[in-house]
Length: 402
Image (cartoon, rainbow, N blue to C red):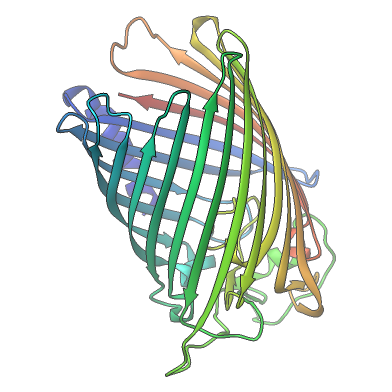
């Protein structure tokens, strides 16, 4: 499946010059990751592609996105996700300062053996409104999603989400953004606590293994399969959870094509607990479905510096910190066994540095070719042994945009 996805991305890139109206972008990013100073490194390849078409004076937007890759955690943690959708923009004035966007999309995710039971299909619909009074931009919107897990019906869910945001630009080249988002999610299953979709057994004997936390921990090395503990009770109303997130960002232009931004956010959850979480691999990014946003309170902050220097070379560096407290998820010990008296709490620090080098910009015309080199640092501490590691990743990738 991953080879097919990579071949499709390559075909998008090669076909781009023959298409007049649509825009196409694709990237392939091989990387090497080292954990906790271990000798040797694990190799991975991540790739993504997007096909977008605007027409009817850019009122109609159609888009298809593909994302595929792997993780360095022992086991088959590959994934392929597809999404396709569209939107229509209604304007309320001649200058198109006030607009309404309505649309929908469908998506499919398929995973490797390590988390194949967490495959899902989904569909969503949204409506967003935008006003631009003076230097400000005011946005608000609503989105509905329904997701179905063919092998784990206890995780079937519907989600409602709404947001409101204000962006203000000043003559000092300062931009302020404030946003509040709210949401609710309903699950078909019920549970007295959040179960984790994983069993930790020896891949050969089937016996629960034990050992220390060297490297990524023996719990990761003994990951063999996925199972689901919560069940759907006939006639039960299931369970529902809610969350509120407040977000703020300040961005400042420091010089020509150089900017600094600082952001913070705070999330609080309430209601019933999610019945299940997926045991995600090391360095998995919080995505809201597997590492469920409704399962933990969180505080997050970060700083990003970005600059474009001569020859169009783009430099970017960032550092982020995240503290997540899970209200009803037990931590795992070094043997991969849940500890009923310890709740999971994660603290994650990440740092990134990337350089994007344009290739032959004077010769490629409408096609932009880039080489992307980068370094990732991740330090993950947790009450759960599954999530205690320090990782260093070096990437050298290739991107094309039309």
